[in-house]
Amino acid sequence: MSEEKIPNIESHIETENDMLQTIREQRNLIRKLMRDIRCYVLALIILIIFSVFTNISSFVAFKAMNQSNNFNQKLPPTSLMWIGMGSLIFNGPITENAYENLEASLNTELGHKVTSLAINSPGGDELAAEKIATLLNQRGIEISILPDGSCGSACVPLFIHTHKHSSLDNGQIIFHQGFIYRSDPFHGILAMVGLSSDTGPVYMDKWAAEFGAPLLAYLRSCTLADPLRSPIGIAMTWQEIQDVLRGHAQRACDVAMVDYECKRLDAPSFCKKKNPI
Image (cartoon, rainbow, N blue to C red):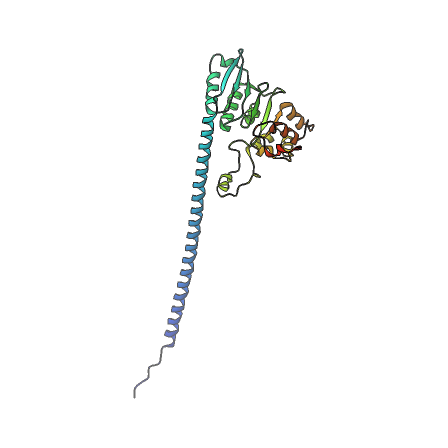
């Protein structure tokens, strides 16, 4: 009589447990693999976005620099004129060449005797303006605005960043938008996709605020247009600025802007109204 084989139940259970363990390990491996894939994809997306952002930023900066260089090349040359033994007249745009010529002039025997510089400038290159201010501070030279002249755009930081400065009442300081005027880093990218606006910060905001918060508040009180975001802007004498800083403005911001903008051939549309203010 043959003996029947009794199945090994324990062995069977162990085999099932091993299979379940293998399945669990495979599932964990798959989950880990999917997690790694998601991390890699996310890292790749971030890298692509960063690369695109960097390339666009570089392109915008390059384009802005080209525009600035082209703009500077079209500017008339700046003249330097001696007045007596200790004064210079700086007449014209602020450019790198103007800075180099001024530095060369001050390094002459006669230049070492210069104690004051009278400026008449529509503005120009901000970096050159800062270099000129540093140069004047190193030599202890006082800056003023030429009688019946003006100091506009990038000339404003040159004027206020020079430690010794004064102005004549008939000289005008001009606040306006400027050529390359936005100071927020994302403006160039937003502008390319049509999402930019004129509500972001501009260089002239900072420069006006350096005179004092009351002046910035005064310039923002205009209702016809924002002079700090207008290509023409607003012109104020040194005395007017001091009065505003003391809280005693001679005239309203709108009046000052109309007086300056509406006398020009390229006057804005609000000047066509019978009574713009």
